[in-house]
Image 1 (cartoon, rainbow, N blue to C red):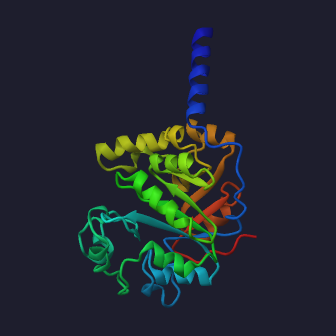
Image 2: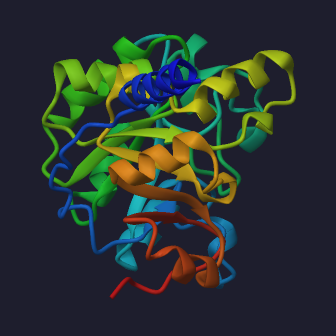
Image 3: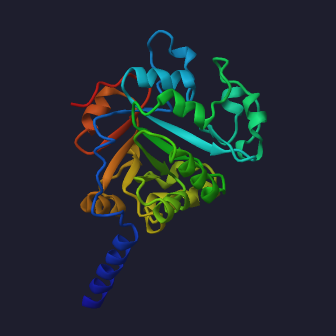
Length: 278
């Protein structure tokens, strides 16, 4: 029996080491004091919000004007340009079924968001924000984690403003760990392996929910789908004990935001105008 207990303790220790984030915690004070508008400030109930689609320049302007930090998504085109969009395909927002990673910048700029704006470039977004609020840049890798991460980093070398990166792809987070260790990096995750609708996604999601991607990424913060957090599951118990920085996504009410303040260091919100943290 003692051998069994010892073996279980050894396995638990090995697992804890594998999912360990980057510790001790690094300074993220430049990101604190803000709530982060998810894809810009675009789907609130205020007048004019309908003219601000997600990841649009109008939505980014509104977030800056109201003093919110911004979370946004960045892709790399086939001809090496950075554009801001959430999905791999443009179909949902523009009606044009093309994949960003297989298309040129000219093809993408021919596609327009519901308010008539073209899909914005990363440069255009950075010009709108101009360093006035911090950015959480989600690196949306499509099998091109190294190239995309390098392009984002090279562009941000010429940007004078606070920012960090995050990604679901641990290889993108690892790229920053190895090549730009000064950049605060986050690993996107959730606690539910059942989020995938196909076997391929379900299997991938087991890896995400287990937090084993941290072995490659060693993130500074965990960006967690707060609705899926299970306080009784092993990765959550171990990570909470290690106390990395935690970022909540996506918070959809002020009541939830207030309740989560004690457990999360930063929050990414949508569908309402958040009250500023005290």
